[in-house]
Amino acid sequence: MKFHYINVHNVNELVPLWAIDPFALARHLEDLFSTEQGRKLVPTGSALYEPLNFWIEVDALALPPTVRVCTPDYNVNLNGHLIVSCSSIAHERAQIDVPLNPIFKGYEGLSGTYSVYLHSFQTEVPLGYVGMTKQRWFDRYAQHISSARSGSPLLFHQALRQHLVAEVLHKVFFCELDHDSALEHEEEFVGMFGLYPLGLNMIPGGRAGFAYLAKLGMNARSAEARDSLVEQLSACESVEGRPNPLCAARWATDSAFVERVVCGHSGRLTVEQVHLIRLGASFGKSLSDLVRESSARNIRQVKNVLAGRTYGRIKQGD
Image 1 (cartoon, rainbow, N blue to C red):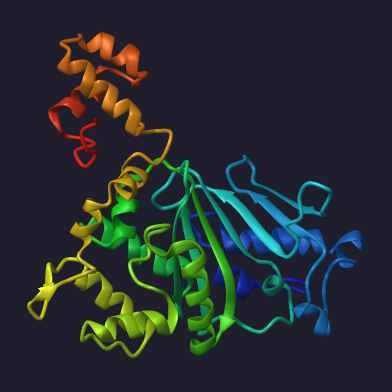
Image 2: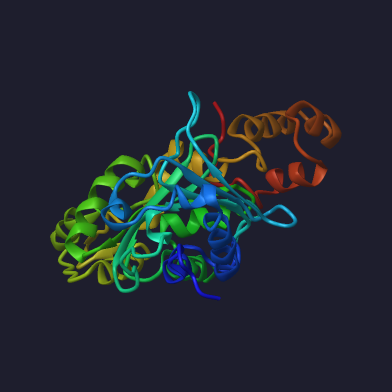
């Protein structure tokens, strides 16, 4: 099939196969923008790099998947975005939000350029991790998943293990960036969304992160080398005989942050529920009473709390 309106290569760079077949999506979009009404929306020339006045929503969870073009109203304006509702390699529900302009024919290729992205767990207080990569963002995400499953102590990887049933937002802020521009944007967005204790980034982004590591005697020449160093350091209690501020164990001293990570979504008990279960048990209440009074899902959930198999990092209530 020949594509006249859609840049199929860039669709493949932005949309992972685990969300929806990117080639099938490109064909659907080509058909959509081949109509008389659709052709009026297709940007060409310099307009390819200017703000668009519409966005595209894809529901990959529907059978069959649906694709629609949306325009803003008084309540919603997501112009310039391609939004995909889907499941992911680690989560039952996910949403992908990527720039829309690059999917159109004539836009420069994204392969080999940097992107700056956010992974955000949609918990009661969202927990975000910001990064940059020269790979496709979802290839880098797969590496994070692999590290998490291998027991990595990095805060982001711990959260990946804790929040398997939470919905996750995967957002690409920018793509087709060079290394220096990506560092600048990453530093900005880590400060806004990701830096501990607001988020899951353990050090500042961009060149500020390089400078932070240099103070610990660790020199990184690229974002990839920096990320590798942070993961290694998160498992070390000391660096050259000095306490390591990046030791992941130190986050356990921040009870408020622990509570957000461990009790962050509706599929798990809240901090208050954990305290109610422990307090009720100290009064000798039965398991059925503890389930009813705490609104726990079942007796097994209560038993796991009392046995210390779950929620062990939540401190005893006053």
